[in-house]
Amino acid sequence: MTAPKRRILLVDDEPRILDSVRMNLELEGFVVSEATSGREALDKLRDVLPELVVLDVMMPIMDGFETLREIRRFSTVPVLMLTVKADEHDVARGLELGADDYVAKPFSQMVLLARIKAVLRRAELPPASPSSVIVVDDRLRIEFERREVTVDGHQVQLRPTEFRLLYHLVSNPGVVLSHETLLSRVWGPEYRDAGHYLRLYVNYLRQKIEPNPANPRYIFTERGVGYRFVDYTRADAPASNPG
Image: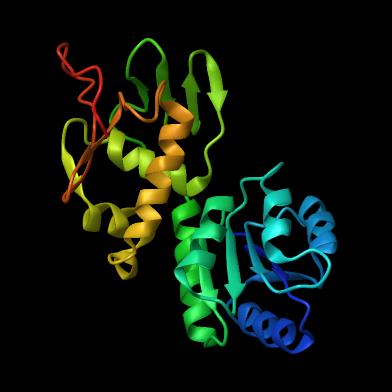
């Protein structure tokens, strides 16, 4: 039985870019919908329900950052941003607003396709752990198969990359995972030098699951090395860490 084709929403106000990117994505087997403005993108997103949004930053009236901010009000769909400003400030702004990756203009179609496939891989649920339900303590519960995280009895919504990062941390309780290991497992081998991605997403997770993000109980920083999740299998697990 043939797997359903993946849907991508492409948002850009330049017809030439829309045409060329759409053609190449369709040749790769994707179903592509288009929008030429932020407002149209928000409407299409609700109708099309894509697996990925490719979003240009430099658009009139509602730019990509504002559009992304609105998307994150109601959706965790992966978003890859296209920007002519690839400096660290703009990249950080996009990531902080909830983007999953970015590609700088001008770009090759091969690079864009590789980044799209990488983002889609990260959005996939990792294989279930031997114990698909993890009760870390009396306030944090994780169900891998159902992709649910519960904190103090309330379900917390995680974006796909956040969940994938949490999965790898939780699956290795008490083990220090290096920056390079986490970047490779969560984002892909080509992201091993993108340390700012990891720092931002660890911060996102702490904001959502820690009782006090400034004094973490679950995700510990091993300075200069990587990160470690509390060893919830031990009765004497430490209660906090300076982060």
